Length: 291
Image (cartoon, rainbow, N blue to C red; front, side, top):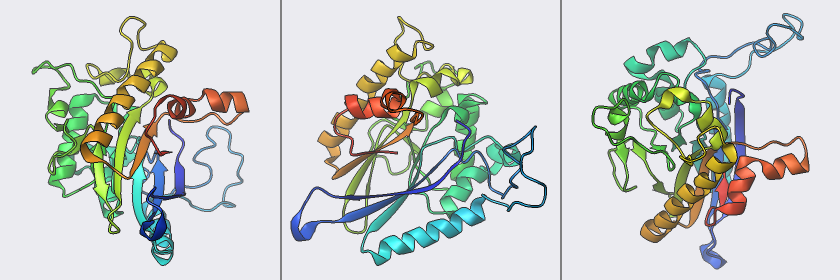
């Protein structure tokens, strides 16, 4: 869950055909992990440094990301396409910037300044518990950050005194709130009037390695337990399918995008097909793109 994926561009066409066809470019990052500043080539090689000191370049950071996003947005505009910028989670935890998270939420603030349209939750958002995550989101709102969060398979305890109560208070179950920062689903309309629906998924493996999220749960079979990833994944399919179906019925989006904090294993064709994102694609209908 810690690897940073830089910008990936995906092009798709709305299923409307003829002269009414519209184009959308999705600009995607995930696992940003508070890397607001650049870092050297040795950062990912500790404790064995394979890069000779002084021979590499500083990479990453918000300023470089800003440059790439601006370039790709201009390319999309020149091609007559709309663009949306999204993240698949793990925006927090990974540098000293996290120390200010509950004060002014620098990660979400920077994402807002960079023009992100929507993000989702990853396992590391819960490293200090759901109550602290709620504080971070409130700090982001107070700082003027406007990056909606979509989380479709999250489940709350329902206990008013529980640690997840502050996070639940920020949650929009309807998908229609203009003020709530966290949504079960979200629909954005582009300048070309393309309605893009978003669902957010925390996968079975990611949920299993986030013990401090309790009493929040994600998709889990209570009979099998969270460590039974196969059983949990089956519940992921059911949870996400219900939200996709509901969104398509209530909001009628042209395109549905899943922001999935799950992943793919490219080591072999069999491993790739068995990966959570591939299995979601196989078992959940109505999703056009999985990020």
